[in-house]
Image (cartoon, rainbow, N blue to C red; front, side):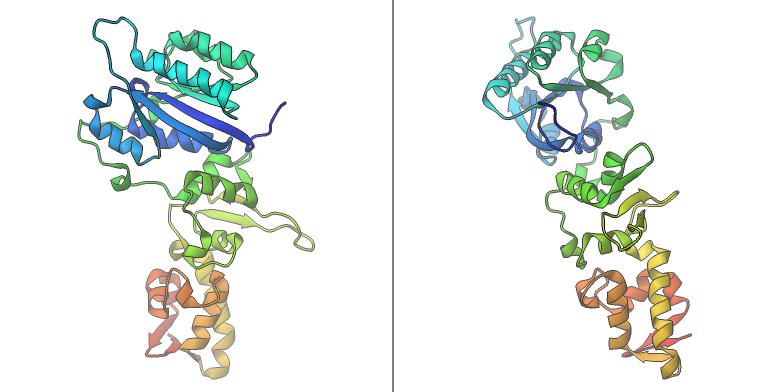
Length: 317
């Protein structure tokens, strides 16, 4: 029975010799739109690679320790990976296997999985990947260009500059035209980061969160407004949030301009905060990422060019 993208049950099995920490995030972004990732395992003799093991743990990958017998000509990690794959084939709901290796020894395993009706995706370094293995897979990703460069001391994942979750999710799930629906994007973001919740960022809806982001352009459905929104990356946009989005600042400026003229180009802070909260999609400004009017002005230079805060009053410059 065929399944559409997004409905699959996925197992990722990694031969640690064939992946670097730098390519792990890219790989999981790439496969995030397949469906739910049930299994994440990396096989190695972890007594020799504690630092790498700890970094993989931060990506939710289970390190499977395999003792290497020096007298053996076979890689014990490869054997354990293959055994686990066959076990999952017969004892789990997994229907998609991601095998991270370029070793031709995995060819019988790939053929077995595919002949059993499973989808097999491979990934590894192009310079050491068997062409026969590539052709045997349903899809194959080369990881070389996504690996980190530099010396032995590499920053941990939390210390590395990272693209925003939103940008990663759009790039992972967009179609050939660079567009993705809101529902699919939301699902992808939650797969990439299960802790993501737009409500924690002060928004009442996912659409409001998207419209406050500088990285994307949101198109609402025409007509009566029924249907899903469509999202695409802004050309030349940088990672960030609403604080860098000129459209949000412009909309707040327009709302303040409507309220201020009747009050001599000034308005109470409570009125200004209420109008800003509406644009940001929050019930109160204090529930948004900006918390108060001064933080809002500090975060939006375009807005601060036209308005100043004096105590609990906002006035036009």
